[in-house]
Image 1 (cartoon, rainbow, N blue to C red):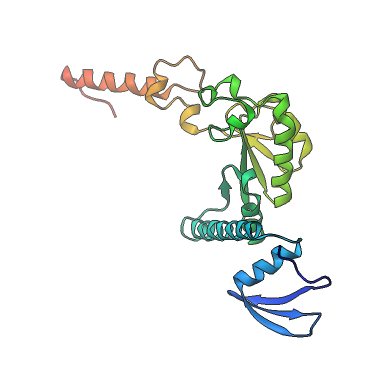
Image 2: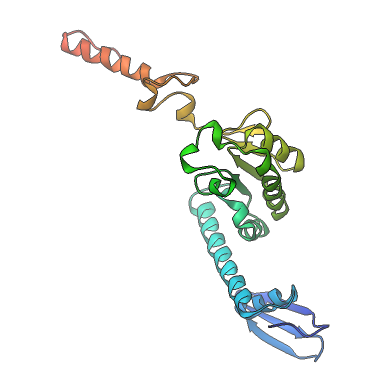
Length: 237
């Protein structure tokens, strides 16, 4: 088991990948690398064995990689905000980005990757059965609070349903949005534009109500154009 000496304080100044650490017990000053400083920070939270320290370094490496990717997206891609999927599994990544001044849109809820832990089969996705139940609501509320505490500025609650969705909105101050199985109980809605206007081929014979059926309108228009061309008539447009 590893631990810091009782009374030891971590007084340091850091730059790039190095830090100067002052030992308040001995009066000595040490020059440390980033890994050594991270080890000391981890041990400040309490004693840890080798496995726990290894896990802490894995988390640190993952957060560093996510931060580098987020900065590149903002610098080269012009992103104003970074969305993190399954963010409740990686709250340290959310915190790392927020601490670096990067706004985070944190997704959580029921997806094909996470629904099984709530007893919802993959085949039930995008159906009423994929909505969060009352039994799942308490856990999902805790996940929302965790992401809010990590600094997320928006929450994306997938397949919330009216029970867990309303419970989460009441439990946090951060705006909660949602797409699949969302509703007026959320603070806002997410909908793919091509879904809202029935753009794809699948909407030709669909019974789901959309704001328009662009696929049917396009098919009818091209059928008329082809008919005019074949009949030797002047085409429109």
